[in-house]
Image 1: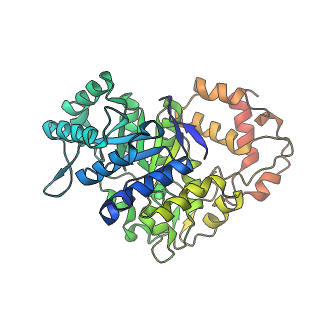
Image 2: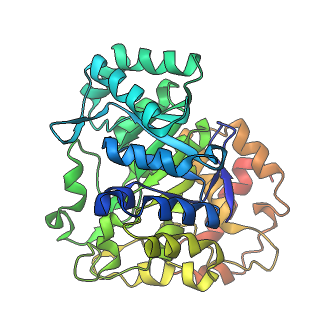
Image 3: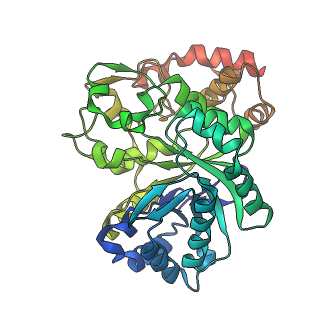
Length: 382
């Protein structure tokens, strides 16, 4: 398993994390085995949005004696009421739900406390100007959560939250189909098949801007819905009109700026093993470029997907990384200090490009690489 820094939190998290689907299925019967399997594969990041008290209790029991092996992403504003999950903004319910989480898990803290499911600006404004964010700050000050996060499906809301400086971690839905859809307050629109009926072109600019903003601000992204609820793995259900493999979906998410871990939904132990096997998969198994280029309903023409097909450069330039740094400067309208410093330590820079065109011939998306290298050399002065 490979590990990444979660933004500026100082936490080192496994590239493959685990969502709570497998805990909820089968009334929690696989909880112990899922936790054992996660530990054996080096999966250390867990998302625990589900407030079901039985599931929380089972996870707590499975963590006994090895709490230090796991980094927990728990959620504020999610409670169990009338025998079902409910999202709440009532501060008394929020507090009661969080206390229950710690008690059932048998721990006195969690690493990341997520303000749960914020998809509208009005909702965000209510949180930031109300008691919920103050409670989150209080929990952090007391060491009961180490970092404040937010979960959202709406890139405009997420960008507002990131710009506020109040959150350190963003849980966001990332996959190649959702990334085509414009911002909206109804997350169900992301998987509504009518929104994929026409030919779609390139990534939604708000989503791309969000990933780049998080990268600049040091806000780590934890990914949900990398498989689109499983739809992307089945040609009959995939909005793209063609199935992808789990490794292609995981690799796509992990090549977006600021992404630290993908919370792979595992309904069974075998599904968790497949996702965790990403660490040992061959590059050819992870490669999504050819599949994307062949999608009948979607085109990424001219858009760098950071897939790495441009390599190898005869001059040794890491073209995908240089392009990513260039896009970060374009998004901000200036050269951020962190981007400038990261560019400066590259072994080979854009100015070394000789315009041979080998990279452009290999690019499945017809990206104007030579022009990008000229722009990068001018922007960074090297």
